[in-house]
Length: 279
Image (cartoon, rainbow, N blue to C red):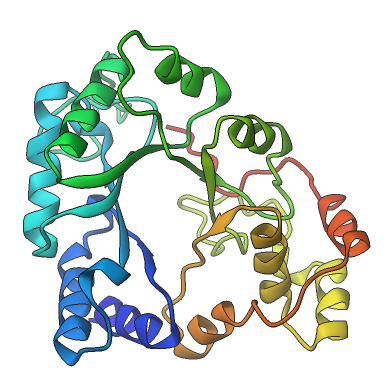
């Protein structure tokens, strides 16, 4: 239920881009929140930009459309605005989302990303997804798709970890040249959950530079980190269930960082990933 409430609060605060995924197990709540807000007359469906994701066990081309249709059924929506390949590697297809062998090792599946991409193109043609993109792809993997013979649609976006400690300058420049939007996840660093986060890296929001700049504008370190990415053309998707912070994260459009401050924040880059995706 906390997800349902968080999404409704976010829509009321002005958010319109909702980043979802089948593996978050909350798409039923997100869909319900969107439908309730439409029923209230607060928004129309076309005001919302919903991103869904194709999970690792669903890469074989014949599984792509049924997987997206399942997501739409859970959301009770007719289409998603963006559908992306969540990771450039595949797990063995089947009911287990994280298939492992008797030794606890992941069971991978050989797959052709270009064939998976063609199946996404077909979903776009069918009107099930308005746009298609990727996530966690590096330059080489992006080029593989973009140089594919008979390419119909190139990826509109690449969702990757991006924040002041991991600024992704080379990937950002490459994507800019090819009109691919970088969507930055973990734009505030992350939670300190050892099961999936590298907690040896210092917490981003304690950073003295971000806090000092924040004092000047009467903003939090989080607001400075978000403003930094937005100002360099990176879409940010901060996650929060806390009503006050949901509203705070949105309040970054009433000030601008100077060129000097942008450079100071850029200099914080340590090339550290909080989400190491060891799989």
